[in-house]
Amino acid sequence: MAQAQQTRESSALSSCEAYFEKVNSRKKLPQPLQETLTTAFARIPVSSFPQVPAGKVIEIQADTTVADAVKVLSDCNILSAPVINPDAATSMNWRERYLGIIDYSAIVLWVLETAEVAAVALSASTATAVGLGAGAVGALGALAVSVTGPAAVAGLTVAAVGAAVAGGVAADQASGGDAPAAADNLGKEFYKVILQEEPFKSTTVKSIVKSYRWAPFIPVATDSSMLSVLLLLSKYRLRNVPVIEPGNPEIQNYITQSAVVGGLEGCKGRDWFDCIAARPISDMGLPFMSSNEVISIQNDDLVLEAFKRMRDNHVGGLPVVEGPSKKIVGNVSIRDIRHLLLKPELFSNFRQLTVEDFISTVVSTGQEIGRVTTPITCKVDSTLGSVIQSLATKRVHRIYIVDENEVTGVITLRDVISCFIFEPPNFFDNYFGFSVKEMLNK
Image (cartoon, rainbow, N blue to C red; front, top):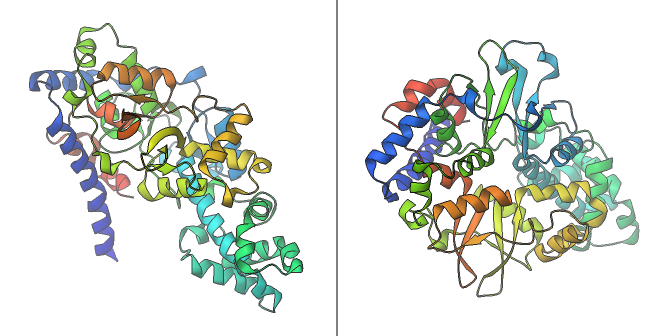
């Protein structure tokens, strides 16, 4: 067991090393310029970075239900928030005060596992009708989808799942529907279960934040350097970095990848930025993946498959393509899961809902017009400055490189940040230390 854990830890950091080695081997920036930029970022204190809007970091209490947490994220137009432990609200130790970060990635993982458990349990509902108890149905469902660990931590015991799902499908049993038909009709009953029945209804943020964590909670001090933040947001794959003032456990700022790229866009007009921004993306080695590595989703595929693909490939969004030519027609991101939870009446048939129908329904509600439907694209000869401008002004997390409307690459916020820095020798050991390494490996 210990050896397996060490292998996973080594793999996590090895992946970061491999990505950054590729980035730096492909960049065509003069070495003196790269060193000058890195040295400059190392001298800029984190405290100089602009504060979050309104100067207050949005936090979510650990005992908040998942449904309410989704509403907070959506209402505040944010992708994630620190989770505060109500039992340690007065603690001066940030490790006790904060349990982690809740984001749409964790919510997607929870929803997908919940849906899979409910689907199989529902498929087994005819077994309940012929005498098997609800607990047995739940056990069959959990075993069929190999639910372990996270489901139990989240309070989704197999007996409770069986009871909740079996109770929600009484009408189907009465009509004599067979198992496949029951699974196809899961949508309406699934929402009844997840939003109205226990244990799903009362599932709290605390229950899922650690079990379904996408990235670790790693704060930096206000007197740390921006280079540390940029490395965490690029090489080490974090999407956000909390900032804590020494001696004060409360989060003072919350630096995201989007905020950093927005800050880079604000540097337009400065010699060092204009020099780099004028270069074609190919000079930066972009895109960092080949065309056959691009993960996409067909517009007639199920939207549930889109979220599964994001989960399985650890990505935050997919280009929506059409036909064998794979012409790009849209974009779907991990944050779009909120529409399924906040507007269940619109998506009662979600197990049969295609990506195209999902996007059309979202647009019909007047939400996300432009952001969901219109993919942001660029050409292979575009400049880095134009890519940064698009990412910052359109407030998106990725831009697709197209050749005659076919997606040939993807540039993410992480990729852009990586273009401006490299990691000095021994920087990780000298400035991050063992504790950060341990958290990155979790």
